[in-house]
Image (cartoon, rainbow, N blue to C red; front, side, top):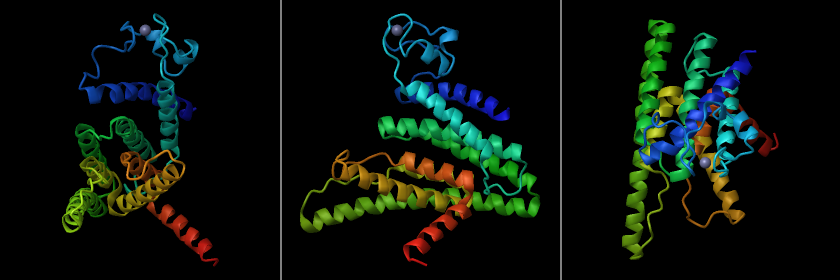
Length: 286
Ligand SMILES: [Zn+2]
């Protein structure tokens, strides 16, 4: 029963996430005006605003001008509902020993921050700083609350670990981006060629990594970034091999970091480490 409630609330939050992903990059207010048709401008009636159901009932078209409403809106609502349900099944290890209700609430907050970041990065190759900063602050807040619940000795270690993780992840990715830029410039200088510096990792990715550190701690953020790199490289190879992506064509990396973060939140870094070791053992025929 709890899962049904979670799915319903998740779908409603998904509806708001659609608004955030659409309006934040345009610097429009998130609250005013209310939802309106992008085509004819007429206000969406409250009963046409029910997540997923209204879209199905209207056949994916505006009630007034019959302009089609992109499938993406109900899809994001369904995805959000699924992610909220998955938060109830998660076994996060990064916050130490805390009540399961605490883990659930922390999880739904985390996933509701990641989803708009992913959508905006896919649309604009941009991870908005205000959202990353909010995610960082909420991650630290959750860690402080978990630290109090874990008692002084465990708690202070936990808090220190997460603060170092946030700073280290930010620095590591910023440094990577800087050195990559210097490396390309050096090659251009030596070979007197003009290679356009491919934006491998942007500073938005560094901010998202800092947020990951605040939520997951040192071990967790390391594993999340490893998952992001492996899944990002696999995607790049497959997309390139199937001619969906041109050579050196950049693609957003934020979604892969988000997959890493959510993966580590669901199962904990140790579970992923075990899978990795199993895979290597199979590879070596042991
Ligand atoms: Zn309309």
